[in-house]
Length: 364
Image (tube, rainbow, N blue to C red; front, side):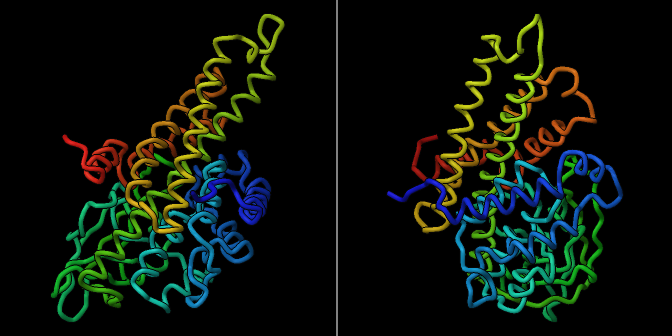
């Protein structure tokens, strides 16, 4: 059995990312940024992509990346979940880059892996693995794309759009410059990860995969995204528990710390148990993605388990912080919004449970 404990390399990577996020994406800076017209911190993203190297972590060395695995990507996602930093990690590194790697698009992969460009996978953020190939965009015989895709994650800051389209000969995967598309940012429930509508009208595009290869590349990107998202949800839940324990230790009532009351201890213990289970499921999914073993099953289990845990942990954080937890001045609401948005991203828990039942031949 594979060792699911964090390796020394993974812990070193975690420390580097956490230190940077503490310095550049603290609660005060985060609250100040998300309400502005430029919610994404692209300066922080360039530091993460260039200096820490997160943009090319899981990209093979021969394609210009660092040759790491999904386990390292999951560690970064976990830390970004703890900070809900507004950077395009999910859209660019996890979804777009993975699709291009499996499509064999060397030139485009190199740009994304080097942090020279930001990518976005042009599918609705709610698209689950196994959902089939989308047909909202069509390609002409000349290779020009027309159509509309709604709620695309991180599209508003993307330079390249990876677009699944119905080509003349079936499913196809194209790359379109964002400058050739109309990208309209929507009012997102999650203020730290924006979604946008993408409209293409005879947009020039580069074909990178077609037929079964295109469908497989898209499916691999969605599976990878859902599996890595479980680690982000673990980070969100960990922040909620850690911050709540700290608050309850320092908040006094009737001459004693609020955290000393037995009923609150029980609630915190339940959250801790949930967090342990979430981390185990997320680590198993990341390891499955790294080794290629039982990937669809491991991802479905992790998403079905972790999405509700992140929501419950953040709801409890707001409740147990009392009045301050209800205010816009405290970051707890940003974590609850991220958890709720993640609950429908890349498939709802119910969708993943249904998918799991199919995979293990569980009768309806």
